[in-house]
Amino acid sequence: MRGEVLHYDDNIGQGFISGDDGNRYSFARADMQQLQPIGKGTRVDFAAKGDYAQEIFIVESAQAATPPAQFGRFEAAAPSGEALGLFGYFKRAITTDYVNFRARARRKEFWGYMLFVYVGIALVVAVGAVFDAAIGNFDSEEPYLTIGLGAVAWLAIILPSIAVMVRRQHDIGLSGWFYLLILVPYIGGLILFVFSLIPSQKHENKWGPVPAGVKV
Image 1: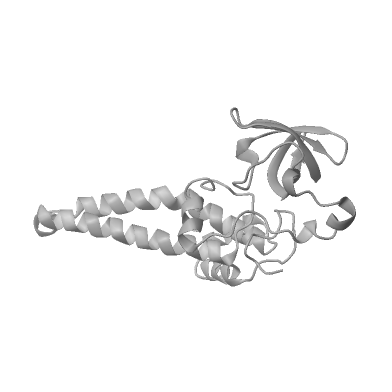
Image 2 (image 1 turned 180 degrees about the vertical axis):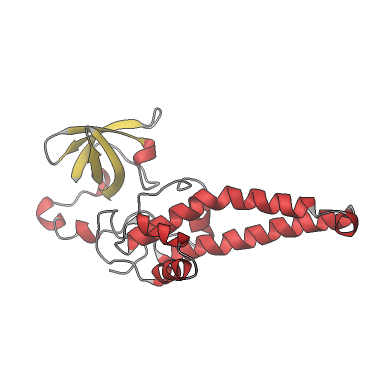
């Protein structure tokens, strides 16, 4: 659904949207899917749940408003968010999008995240191995530091890893519940790998506008 921001207080992170259906919806900062300024007059796309707005995407800022007659065909293909580098996508995935299971993630975002996750885990395990070797754990005991640090690193990235895979599926028009294919031995992981390689849908879908940086 589309609407217009009536009020937003950044100090408390709450505001109100006037929906195109004539109803008024409240929202919180956590419902914003983009790290962009928002204020009175900003046009947004959102999912209504009762009198509450969720999954909010900015489609037109108040400072750069476009006449409605010209905006109608353009807004459906308006890219959302901000195009980032590989590390930028990784940083966002482990911060603001840590448990974001609702939006979309383009291929570059997904693989940028995966790249730095595996590099980071490899470094953590390497540090543990160095300390284990220094105190002699490899000679007489189990490499406790290597195993412990590796386990902590894996636990830390479980939720954002699931979230980015769910958003990747949303980006190609599939439900995030397809992630449960990971439970199917052998072929489940292969199917999810294929999903991760499919290009973004070049139009708005039920999970949001086209991600920024995707050519439409």
